[in-house]
Length: 169
Image 1 (cartoon, rainbow, N blue to C red):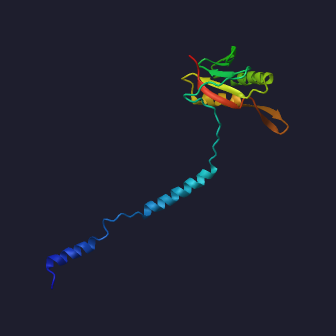
Image 2: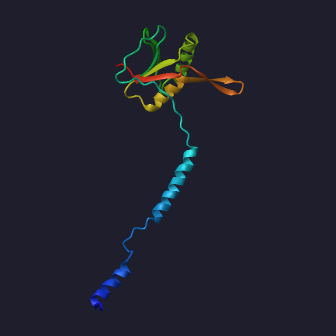
Image 3: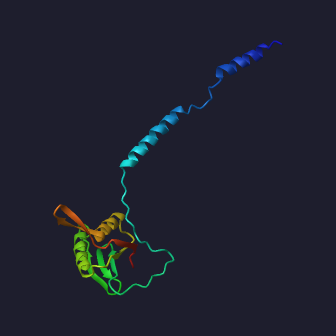
């Protein structure tokens, strides 16, 4: 049986167009290989620093604490207050035009640490409008301080156990 002219023309048309609608994914695979290599290569050089914080749970009750110093550092818009939960404000460091007095905070905390050497805990309370950068600077100031040593600067711990919360209004 012989095919008609119309059938022959349709077959030729389909043979010419075969593969024209296929999706070429080889360039996409090449790009993914390059991206995976780049991400793995840069992940080796990225270094993250993690600082453990004791955040209060939403439904946790306050445990019974022993008598002594319960140090709080309250960061407000105009000052940093160092206080004890039982006695109140111990020292207030007003904010200057250049920013918060973190050097004065470190010096006062050194005196507190000398008087209470076994105390490791501090609570940092923040007012709502305090930037995150200020929180990080205060945490670094409260956690350690640097002293000159025989081989450069040495870090000494002040209050490494940090809890964070909202300042009372």
